[in-house]
Length: 146
Image (cartoon, rainbow, N blue to C red; front, top):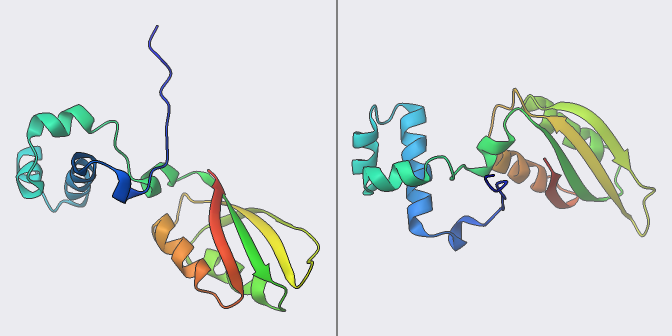
């Protein structure tokens, strides 16, 4: 019986270069910047055999999250309108809010979790997190589950 696959989220800088090149090769193929595997592997300077060996095992995080329900956790200043601004970012990026949970603010901060369906997301998950983290009053924004 084959072993059940295990998955890890690893920061890109910790990965061997071949995994990053395989991910880039896949991106070139999916965007049409390269029309064949031969062309894409030539651009990324890896062998076709290395690409085929790892292609099913390497998947950028945002691709794994597309079309899924993602739970975000925020640490926020207790400020009027801040949650509304956050929800506006979700709406602008076409993320469908499923749930919102908040604890009573203490010491001027609140923890809020928001679950959103990402099927129609118009930007990458990293870009969404950057936008959310950049809002004045957001102390921390992270993906909790997906």
